[in-house]
Every structure is written in C-alpha cells, then in structure tokens.
Image (cartoon, rainbow, N blue to C red; front, side, top):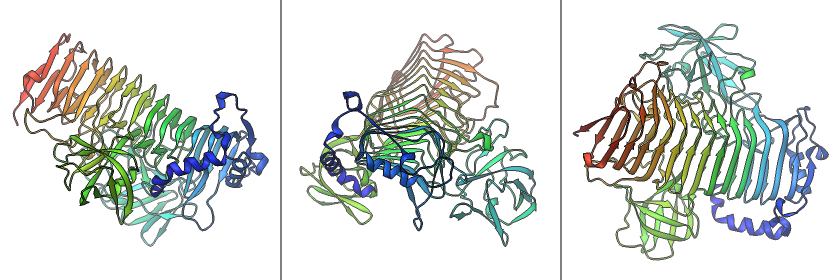
Length: 615
C-alpha cells in the first residue's frame, strides 16, 4: 500500500471527476441520503458476513453524499476465502460519507482489517464497537509458581489451544500460533492494571518450553521463571501474544477531514487507528478498552492510535484507553537515511522513504547534532529495491553528505489532546509525540505504567522525528505514573519520569546545542510515589511553572532518577511558582552539561535544591 503514495493526487482527481457532487459538504445544504445496509443483504445477529452488504450500499450511493446506516445489532465480518488478509470495509475516493453504526457491535473473524480509508474527503465513522470472538491474544492466570514450573489456568473456550508432543500452540479461526516472547505482560487480577515493576517478558521464555495438561484448563510449563526482585505471584494474569503488528484496525491514508466518534475498540490486530499522509483527523470519544465481561485485561495488539507524517490538525478529545499492547498514541514524522548520492541532485535513501512524496519539502538533518539544515523540494521519488531514489528540484547544496538524514517538513501536524484518560492498563507509555507544529496537551488524566508523556526524536532505533518548537502541557493530572519505569536507565524500561524528554542527541558539554525548543509544563498536578517528575534532555526555553507536586504512599520508590527535575544540556530553563509538598520524595534539580546560568529558579513555596553534576 505504501507504494501508492505518489498516486494520491491522481486518486483524488479521478474520484472528483467521477462524482462532481462530491465537493459539496453535508452542511452546505446537500441532502444526505440514508442507506441501510440491511436493504443490501446484511442480517444483524445472523452471523452471516456483512462485508458485501456494506460494499453494495456504498456502490448504491456512488461513494458520496450519503449516510450508510447499520441498524443497531451485531454484524459479523468474515475473511475472503483463500486470502491471508481481508479488509472488512473499504472506502476509496469517497466524499461526504458517514458510516453510522447505530450503536452496533462489529465482530470479526480471522485476519481482518476493520476499515481502510484511502483518497477520501470528509468521511465520518461513528457509533460502533469492534471485537473478535477469538482474539489474537490469549491470557491465563498463574495458579502455581515454583522454581521448576508454572501452572497457568487458561479458559480453553475463549483461548483454544492444543498440546502437540510437549509444545503448546494456540488456535484461532484459520490460524495457529505459539507465543511471541517479546511482550507477555503481567496484570493484577483485581484491578486489571500492569503489575508493579513488571514490563515485557517478566517470566522469561518459559512458555516456549515443555508443556503438559496438568488439569482441566490448567497447563504446566516446565522451566524456571526468570528470577527477579519482584517475583511473579499466583493469582496474577499474563497476556500471551500470538503476533505483534499483524494488521491495522482502522487505517486512514492519503485522505483529509476524517472524523471518528463514539467508537469503542475492544480488539484489533495491531494499531487500533493508524493514519498516514492524512490532513485533519479528529477522534471524539474513540476508546480502546478490554472486554471486561469476558474477563479480558487486553484490547488492541499494538498502539491505540498512531499517526505518521500527517498534516493539518489532529484532535484527540474525550478518549479513554486501556489494555492495548503498546502506547496510547504516537504522533510523529520519520527520518530517512541518505545511503548514497547518485549525482548533484539525486539521493538514494532507505525504506522509510515511503513517507515522502513528490513536491514535499524536506529538511536535511545532521546525524551527529540532529539539527535541521538545508531545505530540499522533491521533484521525483521512485522505489529502488529496498529503498528509494529521490530527485530534487534544485542541485544539492554543499555539505549534504551520505549518512545524513531527511525529515519531511510538509507533512507535519498540529496536535491537540484534551479530556482523555490514560490508565495503567496498557503496555509501556501513555503518549509519544514529536512534531514541529503546535502541540497542546491539556485537561487529561494520566495513570500510566511507564512515562505518561514521552518526547523523543530518535536516530537510535525507530527513527521517529522531529524536534518540537511549540509544546504546551497544562492542566493535567498525573497520578502514580512510572510504576514500571526505569530502574537502571535502560531504554526498554518504559521511561525515566512522568514526563520524559529524551531525544537521541546527547549533549557532551555546556555548549552543546539543543534539539527541542519552547516546551512549557504548567498548572499540572503530579501525585508521585517516587522522586522524578521530569527528565529533560537538550531543550531550549523550557518552562516548568505553577505545578503542584504531591507525594503518595501507594507504591515503594525504586526509580533510578533520584532528583525531581533532571536537566541535561538544556538552555534557558525557568522553574517558578510551583507548589511542592514538604514531604515530597525529593526537591532537587539536577543539572548536567549545563551552566548554573542556564537555570532560573524563583518563587517556589518549598525551594528546590540545585545540584551541579560533573560528567
């Protein structure tokens, strides 16, 4: 699908030519036809596939100016025979279309994508839930934990499995799989939250070892659970993943003005909502959550939502997320590495070039400093083996070299996240965001296992760009975040502090340049069981103002950062008018690769102690 990037303008023009009325908006007086899928063969509650009924209803309206209605009920969607992956509902080149679920339950079978929206304008998906009777995650309860084996109670009706020889395989609708050993998260049974100081693979790989049926619905896995300071306990729940990024739930691409509202994702096979190369996306009350009446602690296989190289505005409002297999949301660009220079205006870049299109403006990024430099306009981009060949409109300026990176300037979104709940019921962090446009994160509730907000800029692993220039975090409540945060400083330990700003660039002197700029953290409440509130690296004009810091005794402290604010290579930092409780775990500001003059501290009711750290 990624190779269709260059065809997007063509898709839009063809769709507009085919349907001249598509340019009319619903609020412009155009009458929106209501088309029930039941008129085209869908039978709620029957278990029969509703795929074709949706396609026929869409065809009946010509793909524009209509509301496709699912009268309230359960609708099943089944894979196409012989296909490894099936899209249940496709909107391609649609204009002014509403898909109204009417409060219906959409249930999927096997390897399926819920929606694929491509080359569309002004589409709304609303009022439905998604689930699988047989999800691509299983779960079990520890009933015995010994030095030599563990016993796991698994509801075989919900999570079918077979033991062949001495190995276990889980079965589904058209699939059979073992256990992915990169996740396997542990939950407290009573609360459904990620267990304290557990992360990925807390049990080691015991589930790949010898297995036998010890009792009805109880499987014995032979081998020792990895010894840890926080041991696995009987009564805890573990999630067993049978894949990681299998197939996106709702995929939005090359489209604009897309709205999702009143949608509940009980399960999808990868990211719940994934958008790329889209302009203006709105999520109102779009939530991922476990199907608790089935006893589940999990929801989506990967992120609740993920947006790559979009533009315009992304608005996330009133959403609540729990149980997903990765972060609440990730909004970011992509760094593409220059492998070689073919001539004076052509470069060969890596496979992440799928995020680039003709006429885009790109920044050249120095891989050592991560600073943006020259701007280049793309004339042509074509696939070449595992990478891409990019021709620019003008000759490359002096200084552009192999090993540098390209970042898309054209496709960068503004982001507003408000009135959302981030609960301690999902793997990893709350939200990740890197975009140079304006970002406002306000009036949210964070109670996360890892960092509540992670701000990076990554040339180490995921190559997610880019540097912030205008970020405000205000009027949020952070409660006991980082209960599975960093004990040793390892990057896989889910975050140093409730707010973690950790780009790949690492300052090495008080003169090192900053990466991010203009970040304000103000009027928030931090209720913390441990010392850290903020970890910030390489930020210029960082403001921490009018925040309230309150201690809790809900968990024992363990995080490696012992200061309240740890600042590394930051410039022009202001800390003022904060209210810090006298018994807060720490009241220190730790400075690395900074001069004391880089920090201004004033008017804090309980003063911070400033510690200068020599490297």
